[in-house]
Structure formats: C-alpha cells, structure tokens
Amino acid sequence: MALRKTVTTVHGLTCTDAYHRVENLTLTQKDQVSFFVRSYASTANKPFNETVIYSPYDLDGANPLAQAYQHLKTQPEFAGATDC
Image (tube, rainbow, N blue to C red):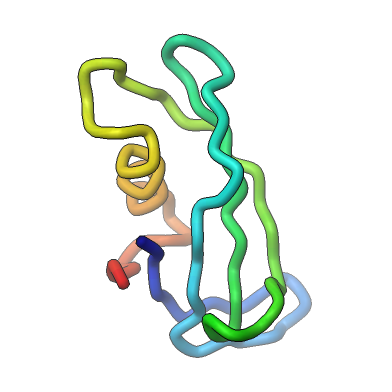
C-alpha cells in the first residue's frame, strides 16, 4: 500500500506522481503510532524526503498500517492523494 501525489519539496523540486510509503510504524502508546513517510520520485528510486508522523491509534479500528494511511489522507500536504 502507498499513496501517489505530485509534490513540490521545500527546495523547489517538483515530483509528478510521487510515491509516498509508510515505513517503520511503531506503537508508541496504547493510543498512538509513529511512522516515517518516505517519498520517492518512482518506486525504483531512493527516497527524496522523509517525515516522522505521530497519529492517533484506535485499538478497535483497522490494522495500524491502514490507520496510518487513513491519517495521512487527512493532512493538508496529502489532500487528494490516491491509493496505489
């Protein structure tokens, strides 16, 4: 699972249809997860950006990875991202 969205980095680099993947997901508390979002220009490249995200976690909800992607879609920088 991953997200696809065109982004422009803080350095002005625009990556059309960049590939954004949740990695290193960790349950930090009973109701919180942390994870890296690594962004790639394509699935074959090295990441060009990495961000640490903290997200609420619902023990009774979907699996932690699915919840992480759902949380990302609520963030302004991932608005309009599509699943891939």
